[in-house]
Length: 171
Length: 314
Image (cartoon, each protein chain N blue to C red):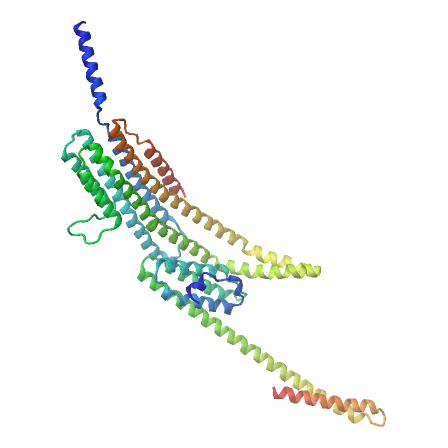
């Protein structure tokens, strides 16, 4: 992000919470180069606009991001520079805390999804083992002489199930 | 011809002679109007500062910084009060000089000194032994003060003071635009930002529901069986509708207060220029030996007072 891009921000380009996190990070990154009142005002307006436009189903995170954006915006508009610097530092810390929570929650969700996947794989493998055993039992009572076609189908089904189980176990 | 008739004719002749020569007008109406203006400038500043202090909606964490911004505004306004008081001193001095009706070098010097003092009170530092850098306005006003000082007649001195008076008035108007208006704008934007933050969770919830509602409407158009979901989303939106309405009312109130404050600052600029125009009329009145007319200045002061009431009422 630079000062030229700042005035050309299209709010429709941002959809996910991660998009808003990145944009706010970029905007806060400009605060150190906001060395004129006009630049400080411009950046402050964009930060407030970000809070106006941001939308996400992750309400807790987006509300915290908005709060830090607005806090930084107000800090930039204060005429007392030392007060402004202190409040900007607080806003940045609030942003970092929100991002930390968001990242931890995302990692947790990924872990949860991974565990769920493993559970389903295990359940499917176990179910296939049972199916294979049942089919093998069935093959013992179905004589090739009685029903040649059925016996061949059972053998084929057992081979397919074993192949699938091997694939699942290897995943 | 009786002695009485002769006496009456003699008196009439003296009156006619005096009228032809003309007498200097009473400059008090100009000085009085300037006094009224100065009082209104002070009252305007107080109304603005009170209005800013009364503006709630400031986040508790911002109160300290907000108070400092108000103090900065007060300081900027005190410069306007000082300038208006300088105008009172100048106009009083001119009225005294006109009343004394002397056409001496001392008279024009008084006008020149008063003009220099007015520039100083308006924040324009004229060139001097201790001043190394002077602004363009100061150079111009300083040159006019010098011209006034070498004038031979009072009417010339006041007329030559006019360009300087106009330049000082324009300087004050420009300073108002550069200092007071940006401060008011930043303060208003921070108030609005603070209000929005207090309703952020409701606003974000409404935005997320609105996004789903948009999709649900499109789905319902394709499959009317899905229309039931729309009502559910509408109910969710209605749940925060009251809070958002309250937010919008507070934002409207903040915007109206900001607009009134800005109008007051603009009115101050109008009266400043009207004061310069009244000075032009004074110069014309002294030249033409006619009555001073400060009606326009009084009228703009009336507008200023109405706006003071408006700002106080909000």
